[in-house]
Amino acid sequence: MLFNGRVIVLELLRSPRRWKVWKQVTDFFALWGLLLGGIFLLAGAEAVVIWGSGFRYQPDTQTRSVWFDDLSFQRSKRMAAAVVCFRQNALAEGVKSDIVLMDLVTRRTMSLDASHLNPIAVALSPDASTVAVIGDDAAVRLIKDVTPMSTAKLMAEIETIDDARFDHPTRMLFSPDGDKLAALNEQSVWVWSLSENRLLHQHHHGHHEHRGSAKHGIHKVLAFTRDSQCIIAADSNGGIAIRDLDSGKVLKRGLSDERSLFEADLSEEDRLLAVATNGTPHEVSLHAFSADPRHPDARLWTQRVSVPVVAVGGQGSWAATAVYRNETHVIIIRDVQTGRERGVFAGHECPIVGFASSGQTLYSWDSGGSIYEWDIDTMQRAYTFSMLQWVLDSLDPNRIRN
Image (cartoon, rainbow, N blue to C red):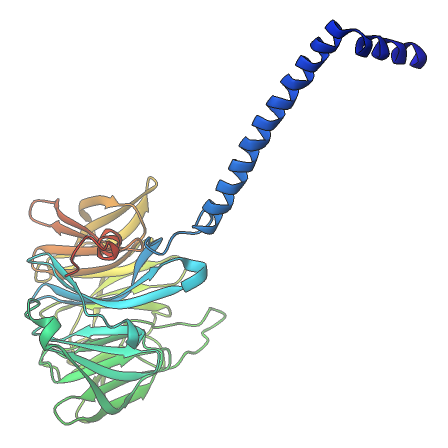
C-alpha cells in the first residue's frame, strides 16, 4: 500500500493538469492558514494590551467600594462629618481615607482633603464649625472653620493639641457645650478640656470574662449628659457608669446584666437610653434613664435585631432598629413604651450600620456608603445620597469637586 501511494503522488506531479489542481488546493489551505494566524496574532496582542491596561484590575480612575469608617452627627445642625474609606485599584494602592463634611439640609458634601492625617475617628462640634480627628499616629487634631462650607477651603486650619494622644479610638464626640472632647477605645475612656487645654478625665474600663461567656466588649457606648457635666461610658464591672467629670466619681452604675453592649443612644432630654448588644442574638433594649442615683433605670422592652445599632428620636417618642426580613434590610420604627412596630422602611441594598435622628427625621447609613433620610410623620423616604457615586464624580476630571 505504501508503494502504491507513492506511485499515485508521482503520477499527480507528472500530470500538468493534476499538478495545477494540487497547487490550488495547497494555496487555498495556505491562505486560510495565514488568515487564521493573523487573527490569532492580533487577538493575542489585544489581550496583552487589555491585560496591561487593567483587564484584571480596576483602572486608577475607578473606585471599587466606599464605606464609612466613622460618622459623627449633630442633631441641631443636621450636619455630619465622616471618615470615608475607598478602595481604588485595590491590589496596587490599597485603601485610602478622607474626612467628608455633609450638610443634610442643603445636601451639600465637601471633602476636607485630610487623607494625609490617616483619620480613624472624627467628631463634629455642636456648632458644626470644628471637626476633631484622631489619626493612626494617635495625635488629636482640630480642623477649625469648616463652616460655612463655601469658605472652608480657604479658611479651614488644622491645629494639633499638644500632649493630647489617644490610640485606636472607636468613637469620639464633643460635649453639648462644645468645651470637652471625649474618646473611647477598647481599654479606656478619655476626656479633654479644650478651654483649659488639659486632660480632664481618664478611666480604664477594660474587658473581663463572665461565667463562661465571651468577653463583654463595650465598643461605642459613649455619651455626655445634656449639661456636659457627666460622661456615660463603659464600666469595668460590666454595664455602664455615669461619672462626674469634675470629681471623677461614679454617680451611678446600671445595666450590669448587659454583658455585650455595643452602642447606645441617649435621648435629647436625657430621659431614655437605648442600648444595643453585640451578643448572640443581637438585641436592642430601651430604658427609662436618670443620672440621679436615687432613681433606678427601668427596662421598658427588649427586641431582637439583625444589627446592634439604635436611635431614639422625636423627643423620645420612637426608636429605630434594623432587621433583616424576607431577604431585605429594613428599618423598624418602634413605640418607645411598648417596643411594638409603628412602621417599616425598606430601601437599603447593603447592611445598615448606623442611625442618627433629628426631630421627626431619621438618617440611616449602610456598608455600601449610602445615606437615607426618612420622614417619620409621612413614613416616606425623603432623600438618598450615594457616597460611592460622589467619590466617582469627584475622580472625574471633567467635574469640579466641592
